[in-house]
Every structure is written in C-alpha cells, then in structure tokens.
Length: 140
Image (cartoon, rainbow, N blue to C red):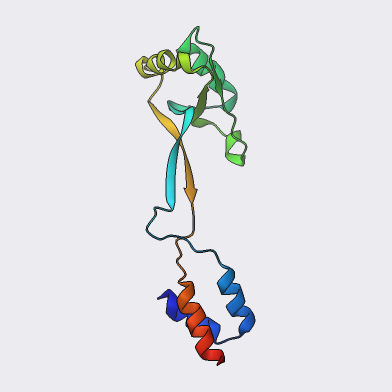
C-alpha cells in the first residue's frame, strides 16, 4: 500500500523524491504505542467531585500523620473545576507501602491506580530500496 502511494508521489518530481527519502524509517514490528508507569505517582479516585482547593485537605484527612506526599497540580483549563481525582506523588519511597495501605483502607477513596505515561509514534514503514529503484527507473 505504502509503495503504491510513494510511486505515485515520486512521479511528481525530484524534490518530492528527496523529501520522501529523508523521512525516517520506523520499525513496524515494534509496538509504537507504549505505556510506562510513572514511578511513585498515583491517580487517586475520590467518591465525588470536590473543588480543587479542597483536595489537599481531603487527602490529609485520609492519610493522617503521613507527610511524604504531595498533590501534583494540573495546568489546564479543566483544573479550575471540581474533580473526582487527584494526582498524588509519594516523595519518600520508604513510606509508599504505608501511604498506599492507608488510601486503600479508607472509605473516602474509591480507587487508586498507578500513573501511566503514554508515548505514541506514527505507525509508518518506508522501504527505501523500492523508492530508490522506482526513482531510478523513472529518471532513466
């Protein structure tokens, strides 16, 4: 499919052929949409929508004397509205088990999920040998 498109494109001129040759090759056998867990960050789902200003106090009530955490602020327009989740970073890995246990035991917390970061790449493959052969046959 891609080869037919590139053959068609190559007929429109030398500059277009050079541009196509400069496009990087991406290995299609590899999964190009990857999710990785962000270390020590958790999405804490609350039972209802709570104003952003109250998130920290709400989590403090649940965690009590645990102090090795912070709320990561969101910087987008939606952050001005009440939310039913908080992004929590555990700052001291030694406290992680205790903090997560306290959150899971609380009836004020609905769910806890590890934060994930998604990386997406274009899923394209270019066979440079066919392009070069086709270009050579059209110019010769």
